[in-house]
Image (cartoon, one colour):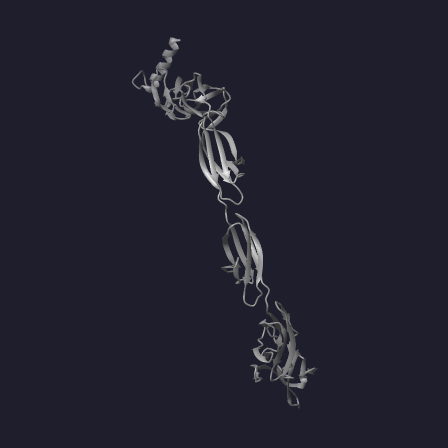
Length: 449
């Protein structure tokens, strides 16, 4: 055995110590790449001489070598390597970490064990293969104080920890005025006041909630072996009232007190019964009652019925003068359709029977009237009034020119009304000329360019 060790040492001397023995020719040396996972491991010879840390490249002579690979917290590795002349070789070594085992016991048992924020089980608990290093263990059991223990795994020897738990229970008693408020502890519903429970000592987020009353939020401290008693007065919430009217703009009175013009938002009222009234010019007053409920948002709608009415009428052609009960009202305006007027809207008229007249100096006849009955809160659509008013001038060959209404024309024919109630078809060959007219309200003829 001593002879083998001597040969290996002699070979290393030839590899790494140029002054020891005869130097091997350069062309005989090989390349040895040593890698470890993880890296950073130190390489030693049999005589404990260091040759650097991994990854490491060496140039050994042909021979067999015995190397020791060492890294803190990992098991050492002995590696035998045989090199041939000018051989290139890579050696990859996986290092195995040194681990220890731990036994955690508690008095009483059945406590939850958390190590470095990782839940591992209940006591008594054996935890094998723990890497070397410091740890923090938390021991938690319902009804007992939470305990924390710091320890370190230094080697592979088993380690034992025993932790004694102390009782950690206190009482919490809650009352409220009025009663039957719902109780939430740390966001979880627990019951209604009056309420009594046992809790582990510590701080808790408390919420009391009851419909129509302001919410109570507080952090309470429960002490072990003590009774924590709390009483609360709940504040009744007002009713939030929004008021709208149709049409909008009505003056709003609640219990005869003016509140402004609708729409109104966020009127705060105490719980109770109220009378509300809406008033607006041109409409009958509207009243009703409503009940304000604590803590609720309610919408009160006030529909108004107009005490006036109106009428819609179409008067053709555009440019006709409109009279309402003998009084000049307006002149009909052209719409997007040729020869058709826009609707004339007559509004805010008290109920009754009225006369609407259309007039045009070129009309035959020059006036026409219809009667309309206006009803409160309604818009009446009357029969359209159409006056016969020329829109074209036509000259037939060997005949005088005539004014009339041009209804339709094509390449060969023309449909023309020379007087009210008559429509005639003319051939283009009979017509000397045909001009479209534009007329103002005074009946003056304007030739279309």
